[in-house]
Length: 207
Image 1 (cartoon, rainbow, N blue to C red):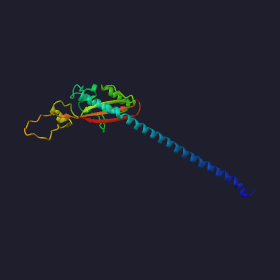
Image 2: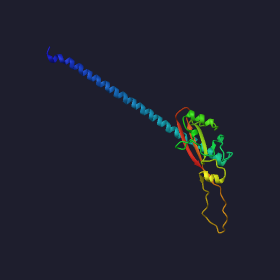
Image 3: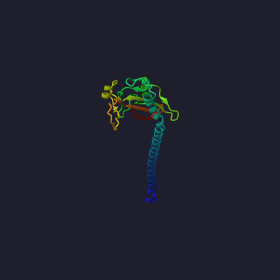
Image 4: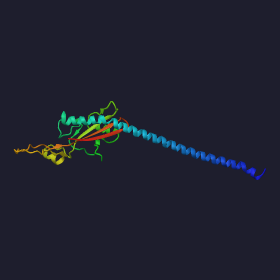
């Protein structure tokens, strides 16, 4: 047996070991790529689900805002604008603890914590939406830093809409009728799919 013939099996074994090592590295890379793809698909599915939920919650959210407008301006079922009425989702001034985005403290946090604080404050039961399966909760706040009652207090402590004065004039000068200051109200709505992380907020300023 020559020297070259003796080394041939050793070289073949080394080559087989290198091929096995490369194959293992390739399997690891493919596994990581598969995991990354699955994660990407899960994230895409989650984003699509959140967008669909936000889209489906737009109509019931708008209905909640309309209910607040009806309560304050149309049906006028609110006993008074100058005092808090939690049973009507109403507060005569901005509540402490709002977020940087202006979300009241009663509508912040996880679903369980928020629902407990919301009901504990004496606000009505959430409004269920049969189409999206969402629960709707809303808070109406008068944009004031004090529960102002008189016109002077409203002017001094509330964001108000100045009375509109017509530009047209008349030949006969008549003493203008004094108009009361009109405060602005903030309506914040939160829509939840119960016991999930799906949540959507909407806010409107009405006058």
